[in-house]
Length: 216
Image (cartoon, rainbow, N blue to C red; front, top):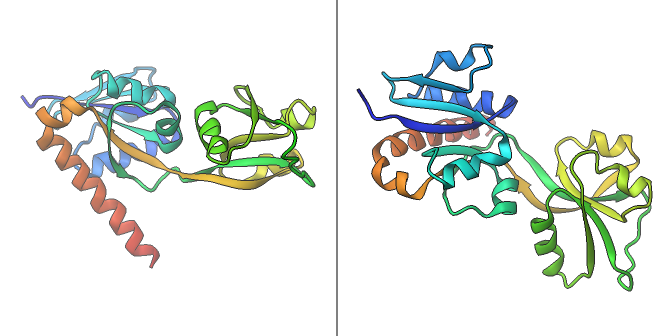
């Protein structure tokens, strides 16, 4: 029996989409698509074991070695800076990290900028590089409310379509960094399970390249 390659997938649509890519790369596990509430799924023949975890926890599982590889958004990697290898941009789950404010907002550099965000590390690094004095208010969810209630001047958040911003009279005013899903690997696993990880990585890379070629 093959040694298992342990894979941490983010719960939700992104994880399901990425699993399809993994299956096409030679690591299928049909049981994964079963609607039961199991969290761990194995395919001994393919030598793969999948488990669903909260998206922000994927790098933790990979860094600690519970997972050999995983898929995490670039936003999570930038925010937590885990000690892992980032192997490939999967070019899915694309969005961007933005600064957003109410329509007509004008920044006053003489005042401390109040910023609501779920990503304090990214926010601090972005404004520090601009020597901008800020006051970070960390919130979890529905942070669009903060400027409306005049609790903050701006927000830093992930923007996909911008619909939620528009519905709350907000608009993106600066893009901090583009975001997409990345294949990551545990550093020890990359050495000792290199063949399996390389096979997976090459299979995924080929799919990414094929999709890019279709767009041209």
